[in-house]
Structures are given as structure tokens and as C-alpha cells.
Length: 285
Length: 285
Image 1 (cartoon, rainbow over the protein chains, first blue to last red):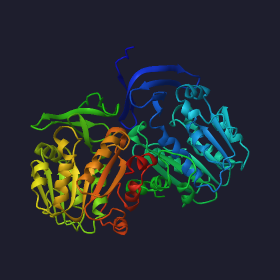
Image 2 (image 1 turned 30 degrees about the vertical axis):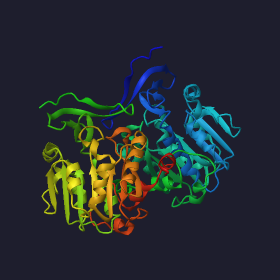
Image 3 (image 1 turned 90 degrees about the vertical axis):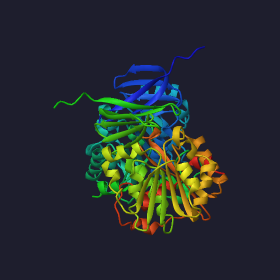
Image 4 (image 1 turned 90 degrees about the horizontal axis):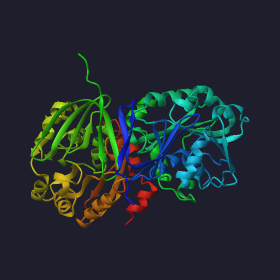
């Protein structure tokens, strides 16, 4: 059987004037859901690629970076996170990482677009391998409303694993949403927000932090890590904590973690906390 | 005056099946030197872009990452580096960083292609602002031969700031060249080699380390850092030391550095030393 000649899929990111691309063999799927367009490509070197509204979301080869760094730093900072909520996260990769923690008793994933999860089950089955865990609950509804209606002081960690702040995820990046998160978190609880590229999206990152503070979070830490399929190949997550600081994490726990990871360990956790000079200056406030 | 409509310049990196691109307004210069092709573009968001043999080398906006991480970690590890050689490095950005160190008494930059430096002077003048420093010497000759003929035990730090191991830089990535470096270094001297993407070029990185060991270097450390204009946006430098270990660096000196940087500080130095799980396993030997 002959393969089609490979071509290149480029995401041209207007805001930063930079692009990322992968060599692809074929487009395996394309659909318009009520919320967004979703495409799946077969790449020559990066496994499958999911693209939502023209933005690369996940490749088979590099998603471990993002998913591990969205979950383990918060879970190795909280002393014992029992109840976790993931807002967005429809590819289920963050859910899988969270469920590696034995102390977690329940995780609810609140994804607005069920099609993201159904396509992940089909094209990224390894990300969905923990979906049958009895501690996991998958809801397909509006995360903004769900969080606004969530019982007060009922969660230990909230992970906002969303698309960019345009389209359906726009309402996940503002003070009103962060107030809902603050209300839903217990004392010492941690909010994690993917906070875009430290190099290309600095104004957005500053706005996220400002909105978190306005919502009542006083302790903030922005972590950075590599992520080849996102603009500039360098990404960040911002942690915000209710009623406690973010100075330390459970370094011995991380060093002795009883499950495998590919990027995360105690050293890379500490490394992610290091602020480059320009970022230290930009985020000083 | 009307500007031309912007278009996109993509570097399609065959080896990794991934590409990086920038939005460009115009190609400002193109020439074929005796060694390679060099192009200069004006981008919309990243300043100037230099491309050699189709590979992006430098943009105005992000080169600080690479240049700082190629120089300061070695110079804040060596107790007092007086004599430094840069092999390649024709854009002069590494030279500028090295000269920020007061303890450095002389730096020789050995670039095979004088045109790289002449174009840097024209299109990246900020990288060349230290070229007139009386401690700096710019040679335009073959770095492999220069290193083979270099006086034994005459250097404290050698920085191999080269293009990829194809074309004129091929001979900078093998045991014979590293033996020359070993010979030229004093006891405790440090060799720095740009060692490509930790994610896309792992076999190459392992070969570099193997060749360094075969050449007599027993202490090795591979550092990682973001670099948007290089494939995968994530890059590495490998340090090798003659007759001493690489366990520590002058952390207090780095924390009190008397010159400005944009990425490098004591925290990011330590962060760069953290090995992600997959890399720790791959480099265990």
C-alpha cells in the first residue's frame, strides 16, 4: 500500500508572528461541533495531532510535558488533595496524571465539548486509559456555570486546562471565574491555570495574575516548561493558593513518587519555579 | 511609504518532522559565501532573523536565551576563567556575554565565515557592541585546525557555538576535535558544546557525550533551556570538564552578578541542570 506524500501543517499564530508545524501524512478527521472545529492529523514523527479552531492542542509525542506540569506541581504542593476538578481537559491527559496520585479520592472533569473526549478516546487512547477509574467522573457541561454552582469549600485543587482565551474558553480567564474557584476551594486549596507563553503572551499572563489576585488569591507562582506544539515552544502554568503560601512543595514526596512520569520529577518541579530575569522583573508586583 | 504584505518564513526540519516559522515583511539580504548560504529577514514581531543553509540561527528577540546559556553557566562554574575561546559564534552574541565577565582577560572568536560577522555587524549591531573590547580577538579561520594547533593547557573555557553537525560544522562534533579541546584546556577547564534539542535529537546528544568521554572528559552535564527559533523550541548545551567535576557552580557569584542578563540568573542556572525523567534515563551511563 502506498502512503500519500507527506505535507506540512502549520499553525500560524498571528498574535506572536510565529508558527509551529508538523509534517503530516493525512487528515484523519474533521468536524464542526456546536462549540468549535476539531481536526485530527496523522504526523510522520509526532503521532497524532489534535487541532481545535486552528490551534494545536495535543500531539502524541509531546503532550506529556503539558499534562504532567499541569497536574503534579499542584498535587505535590498540596499536603493531601482529596477532591480535584479539571475544567476543560477533554483529551483526558490531565485526568490521567491526577489519577496517578493515590491520595486523590475523586476527580471531576468538566469539559464543555463531549466530542473532544470522544475523539481522544479514538485517536489518543493512551490519554484515556484511566477514564474508567471509579474515582473519575466525566461531565460534559459549561465549566463556568458548574464552578459558579459548586459547593463552597468542597475542592482541594482546580485545574483549568482550557484552550486559549478566545472562543468558548474566554470566560475562564477572568476575575468572576476565579472568584467561583476561590469559593469552591477549601483553605489551602490550589488553582492551576494554563497561562500561555512567557515570551509571547506576557500581557495576558500579567492579566491572569491580576485577576487571580482580585479574586482573593494572594499567593501566586508561575511555572515554565517546554511545550513544542504551542506557540514559541515554551509555556507556563500559574498556581494560585487560597489562604496559604506557595513557597515550598513536598520535595521528598516528589522525589519518591510511586508512579512513572516522563518530564516531572522533584528537580524539574523546582526548575519550573525558577523565574528568568525578564520574567522576574515583569511579574514583580 | 507602503509596506509589503507580510508572508511567513518556515524552516521545515526534516529530521524531526517539525517546523518553526516567523511572519516576515521582507528578505533584506541573501548571499552564497564560500562556506554556506546566508539570508537576513525582517520579521513583524521578532526583529531580524538570520538563516544559514536554511536553518534559523538568530532572531533579535529570542537570541538572548541561547547566548546567555552558552556562556554564563560555564563561566559561573569555572572559579576564574581568564582565557576563553569561542569556536564559531560569528554573530558575536556569545562573545558579548563572555566579555561581561570581568575575570576574563582574553577571548578569541574563531569563525570560519567572516561574512556571518559582517552581516551581524550590519543587522544585529547590539550583538556586536562588545567587539571593540581590547580583550576580544576576532579570527576568521578554520576552528578545527585552530584548536588542533592551539597551545596545550592555554585555555580555561572553550565554547563551541556552531551550526548543526552538517555542512562546515560537522567536524566540531567528534572525538578528534574534542581531543584538541581537551589538550588546549588547563586543569579544571570547561568545554561547552551546543547539543541540539533534547526531544528531537536525543541520539545526537548521546553521541556528543560519548565522543566527549572518549576524548578524556569524565565530568559531563547537559543543560536545557527554551529557544523558540530552534527546532522544537527547546535546546541544550553540554558542559564537559577536564580534571574536575561539574557538581556545583558559583551560585553566590551568579546571584550577585554585576551585569544585566535577561534569562540567566542563579535560579535559571540551577533549573537548567535539572534533568527531566526521560533525559535522566536516556543519559544514564
